[in-house]
Length: 186
Length: 191
Image 1 (cartoon, rainbow over the protein chains, first blue to last red):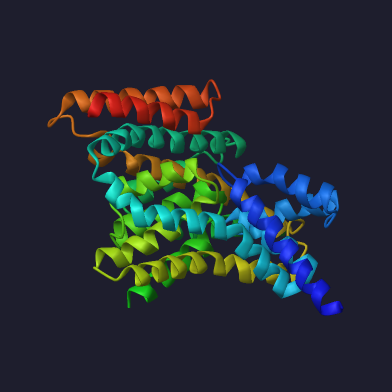
Image 2 (cartoon, helix red, strand yellow):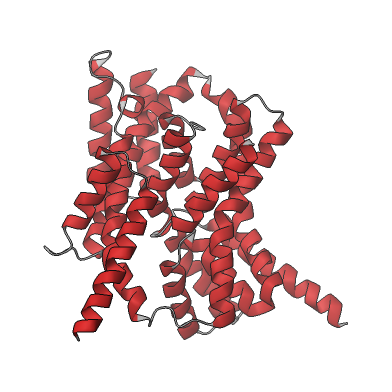
């Protein structure tokens, strides 16, 4: 019964990631303890060392952190099929919830009280985005040598209306070139 | 045609979105609000608030919502709107899906590579700038009201901004709690 056990394994992967997607509030980092509990301790699909490697890779890659982690774990378990299933499982809960809201939210917003509530929430959200910007600035350990990078980035995007993608490409290229020059000197 | 532009926009966001959900915000804002006008600045802010209160990654949430609204704004049938959500969500995941598979297959020793480390020395501070720019661009009439039209609403908005900032940054109060509090205060003051 190789076939039926393969299917049940796939269902198990899907269900695990669906649960993780359903209970992850507040971004990908909140997902780390859930993955640790479900995948490392309960199901033992991955060792702790592998998991730390995985977190680093998922952080370094572009894209959605939570989905990146699930693709990586899914691939370990069942190759391409596992990667597809785990990505789907992670994304599906929020896809369905937001779809539901998109369908009904417009009608909701016509109620005067709901609009008033959201007018109170909007300035709060601006503060909620300002906070991780400052936290990230502390984590990035900005020095006098790197301080100009965020300032120039803000100037280019906010002041001149240049696409953030261009800024990312320039910053990456600049980092690569200064590494190259540093290596040649060494 | 609109499906194609949804695909390209969200593929780009997925490909260049470094630094987690918040790092992506600036890219999403640019594509969804300024370049394609799929959402207004107020709708974009609302979806960030909803993302905080509902589970799941902010990237998927915004893609799903923007994909739906992009089709709805041109008067499409509900079924096509759902298809728009699907296209946007798949497109934002696709680049990192391909990249993560390549890394898994070839098991590239990614983090030990000195070149990658070098790139991130300047990329990380740039993401800080991206996030600051996204914050600044959200400070507008649509989120704070207008000082000249309704000074009281403007000052209340500034108060709610400061309250949320101080409580989450200095006192580490859960963002969801602050959204609920500001929502109640908004309901009391603005209706």
